[in-house]
Length: 134
Image (cartoon, rainbow, N blue to C red):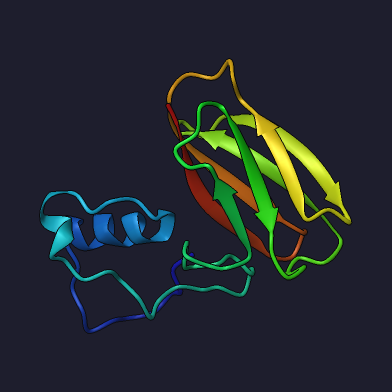
């Protein structure tokens, strides 16, 4: 969420696109590749990670054939939480709770090829990474 207030900077479509690409770890498209991402105005009190390159979990293999693993690292989320997977349209295609688990194998064999977003959360913090299904 953007914090209310006045800012000295002006932004255009490419700054917004670059910011969204950075948030979701997407490749930079067209003029967004040279634009500056917007920072300094985001309210992160909700615990949402701004950097998709966090080290809380990994997804492998990536790209995948529909079967991939989510490896939780360092118990950063504690012992309880959930894993959700969304397609590029925002539709939830997988959800499962985890308890005392460091790894979870996910099967999306019948899902179409494309980009999917893996969301790992514990109710207070959430982290998102993308996975490509071929």
